[in-house]
Length: 240
Image (cartoon, rainbow, N blue to C red; front, side, top):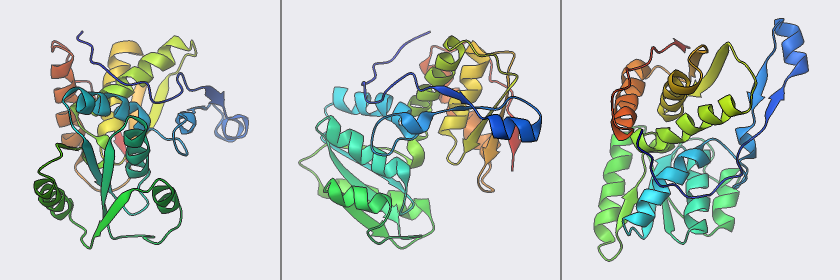
């Protein structure tokens, strides 16, 4: 399989912890992959994606990185933190929804001096149009745009890596459950499990009613193409 350059942004491997109380209540061993300990900002799963995305941005000479999400988006805050870490300028174009005042992740954005702009819309089409408008204004700075959640074919490779990391940690799992909010993490876990933990069933727990079967499949097809092709599209399982 082809490999892609990535930056070293997080603290990996993250540990696996058994949850004794949850395991006792459910009557089965339940473990958690501690990707809250990735070591940037307050941690979170998007660091794995950003290692690939910002490596591409740096290699292609981009100076400004732009992304989006809700007002308290952890992805957006981590994108800003990682971009600053590697000498890029971040701009966050966020939905004016939820807590927009200086609380939570907006405190961190403020402390980092990040350019945060809010768009009063529920539509990501409007958000991406505003990102395009801002990019046109920044004619002197090449702009690298990252989709919501870092969820594209390249970003998903971060979670292919995560499953390979889990396999190397030596703990057997019959079932892996991951969240699915914008599709990229789930796409990487489905594909990674097919490659490195083929005996484990993967279920993605969806956060809303988006057509994730189509979204995740499209991302996976792109990731498979990046890896050189020849990998069958894995079976997908979703739970609301």
